[in-house]
Image: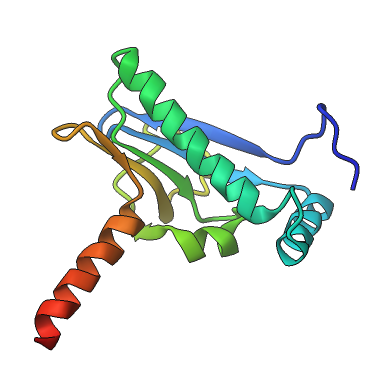
Amino acid sequence: MPAGDTRILGQAYIWYDPKTKTVCYDNIEIPTKVLHELRSGDKTDGKISSKALIDAVERSAESIMREMNKEGVKVERVTTGEGYNDLKRELSQKFVKENNPIAEHRKYIGYSDARKAQYIIKTYDELTKEYGDIIKKSVTEAKKTFKKFVK
């Protein structure tokens, strides 16, 4: 698979909702051929894979939050829409899905892949100043609760 500096893997339409302090990758669109190659890379431990792309999306979400917060624009969450998102399968395996999401593309009247459901990619806690992956926290909390219940 040829991979050069100019290869486009996909695209995302991104917006910010100041009311909920959320940046949303409204969708992540990937050409069918590239998506097939990414998923093949998952099976063969290829350097370019859908797992690697999901990891890059997660790192970019944290970078966006850090930089916007540093510039004084409060961001507490980064999400991506479920709609026609080409990485929906991979997103559903790693991130919590929020049905009836609180973040909206306000005053926008066109179609949005994030209108009905969003996956929460990263969060930021203003009190602790910690950036997190809520799925990891919820799994840890679930294990603690389970241990207390079993005793």
